[in-house]
Length: 290
Image (cartoon, rainbow, N blue to C red):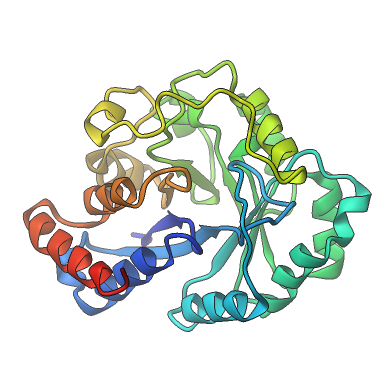
């Protein structure tokens, strides 16, 4: 049976948490669920105008970019750029900072989540070593749309969360080609999802905070998240989904607090009987960086 790949959020702002979890998984695999792997850590460096899904402001240096990429890659973990801004035009392709990020990680080990056809064409031409992934921000909610997406050359397609726990997901062929967002904070069948992504995209281009009203679901405890139809439990992952052939699962969390992301990692990755010992180990190690 294929390994279960988990994709973790925020390779930059949650760098220490992610590296600690990745190292503990390597050193003490018996504390974690069997046959799991960190497939990549996704996100962007601050002020990347190609970024989408969340507004990420701030700044960093070339040295920090190089350090971050190297630390993940030497552990055998790709970084995955969330370059999913759907509002990009040709003039945005020559952004100095985004091209710097791409050049630093252009070693055949890393990935880009994509939405804009303009950016996709540019990356395929200028940075062919990157694996390209079709983004959930495309909001492709029908089987027909997904099947059409399969005709393109993507290494993975991240499904819209309307596929979670639905018959249409299990009816798809080649399930190993799809990735599911297991704990999306967005409410089931949210009517504002596509509108929200566009507002975020515009805010990222203009280096400002999003004007879209804050989502009231963003920091719900996991017990409340589990009440949503679209929430995929660990029992389902290691049961029906794995048995059906799904092996790629994305943990949402770029907009979450560090504490909430840790809660998600403990829930999905760690065997329940080892919850307390692993939580303590992670928190003690994290405290060294405070």
